[in-house]
Image: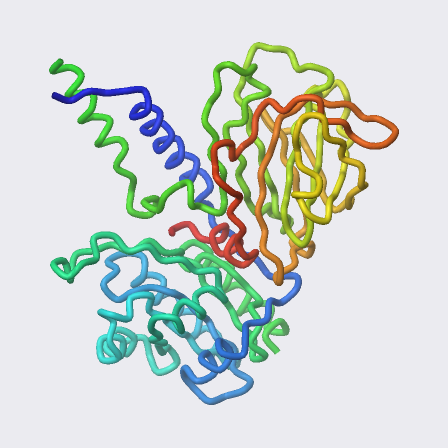
Length: 197
Length: 202
């Protein structure tokens, strides 16, 4: 027999209110960091090694996983679009898709996933502690649901949809939502090229 | 009985969050959700503390309390505490009639200056924070330049009764705390907070 009790009801309403509050916070933001945030040497080296060996190259970094059905394809498409615009504006920039699911996103899978977006969009696959260190540099969290041996294909991962502009010195300069703030990033690339010099 | 089963099914369906919201709300660095406490007057009962980024690039902390019939008491305040390189405390009277002057205090370590009844906040704080009233609450904000990316950050809010004395601010009674019941404040890196604030999905 199903029974309700006060703690169940409290938990239900707390969860519902939480979801509503978080829905109302989900506005996104396009933030130019007033003080650039330097990445650690390990992260800088990894980012430099991803893509072209050009010390003057900016990087546009997004996190995701290839089996993500909705958010990640759009965020990589937007990343690729911004990299193309940068190229048009003679700004040296490479896009980097960082997998948060290296178990399933093998190098060959990632290669196939990023290839359609052009040679200026590449991937970074790190594992275990190296991935955790890299994620922490960007404040990225990922939570896996229903990921287990018996469920290799149908699982969901919560992670932020944030994109990061990294300058050639390895400093985070811009943080924005890869889905909602692309027009702001595009405007920045088209109208404020001095920022990227 | 059948009605209660139907109610539970409906509750379960409503409670299933969309995938983008599936991460535990209580782990979200952007917000503190607080249980409603009907034993308190509305303006004393904190419902949530939410962070956001304003259009002029300020980090804002919105402290929302429950709407209520009760008139604000003259000695009641909403306090925001931000743990960063040190502990920052800001107070604004609940009663708008008392003005919008923000009281600022600080402490090297929060543990050295606990926020408990009978304690006095005596060390004047930085004036970096601004405060303004929002419906059923207060919004404190600080420029993003204030953030030290080498130090972690946590925040909480209190409603309390107190008074300004020559030697500082005396806390007479604490009514509510945003993170009441939590074991400890969650310290996160500023970049993690920004990352979450910039994203529409997580």
